[in-house]
Image (cartoon, rainbow, N blue to C red; front, side, top):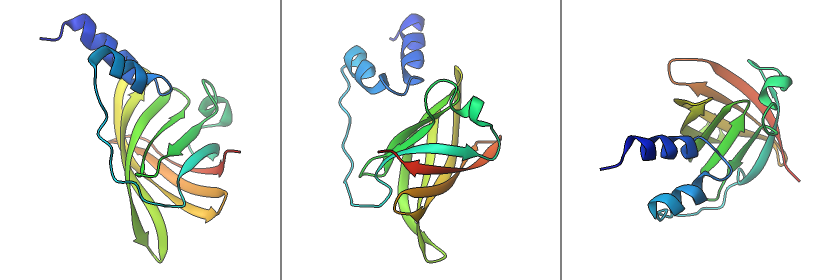
Length: 146
C-alpha cells in the first residue's frame, strides 16, 4: 500500500513538466509503454506567443509557454502555472489536418484536465485551443522553436 507521503510526492512530481517522467521512473521503477510513431507536421516544440484568455505576463511567468508534440502525437505543455501531458490523434477537419488531444495535469497544485486542438497555419506557425474540463477555454497562437 502506498503511504500518504509517497502519494503526495508522486502528485507533486506529476505536476512538474520538465523532470517528471525521469523522477517518476526513479521512484516507482516505471517503464513507459511506447506508442506507434507516425510522421506528422505537428512534431516539435512550439512557443506560445499569444492566448485569448491570459496575457503574456501570466502565460510566460514560470517558463516560456510551450507545447511539445512527439511523433506518437503525445506530448507536454506549460503556460503560466498550468502544465500537463497531451494524448492526441490526427484528424481531418474541413479539409485541414488537426491534432486533437485530451490532456491531464495541474493548475498550480490542483489536478486539471481538458481537451484541445492544433492546426498548422504554415510550416512554422500553429493556432489552437486549450480547454479545461468544466472551465476556461483559450485560443492561442504559437511558432516553432528554433
